[in-house]
Amino acid sequence: MIKFINKPYMLKSKCLKKWLLGCAVKFNVKIERLSIFFVSNKRIQELNRKFLNHNYPTDILTFPYKSTKEIEAEFYISVEKARENAVLFSQTPENEMIRLISHGFLHLNGYSDSTPNQKRRMSIKEDEMINMFHVEQKASKHV
View 1: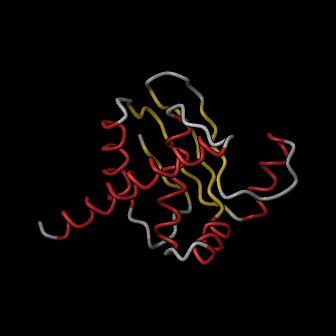
View 2 (view 1 turned 45 degrees about the horizontal axis):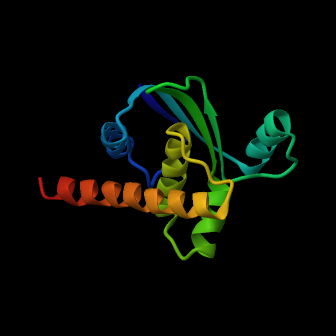
View 3 (view 1 turned 90 degrees about the vertical axis):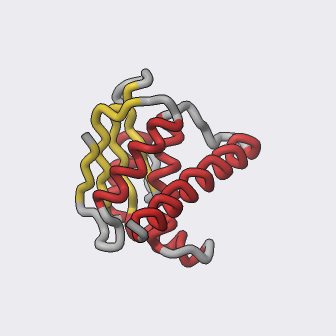
């Protein structure tokens, strides 16, 4: 089950679900339960303070509940931070949110971004996932 809470209008649930299920196949995992919450900077800062002892907003928080090949997790994505990042990195807000979902998904699959090498590796995988999303979108438009 994949669920989106307060999803921005530019993201389509059906497309996101199909893409995430395709990513699960690629990474040889099963999505049992994944809830993605789109929240404000204020809310993500509260969660950072409560769970990570950080008193600032981040773009995403990932909470895994299982550490197996079966995904049970929650993502919290700051819509405000995603929009700020989109401007900063010359991306569309949609692409930035897809990148954040990819980022959380990769964390659930053992990827880390603690070192420069890990960040580069994760960025490459994020790009692969974003490309999968856009290939799927192009294919859907022609059907």
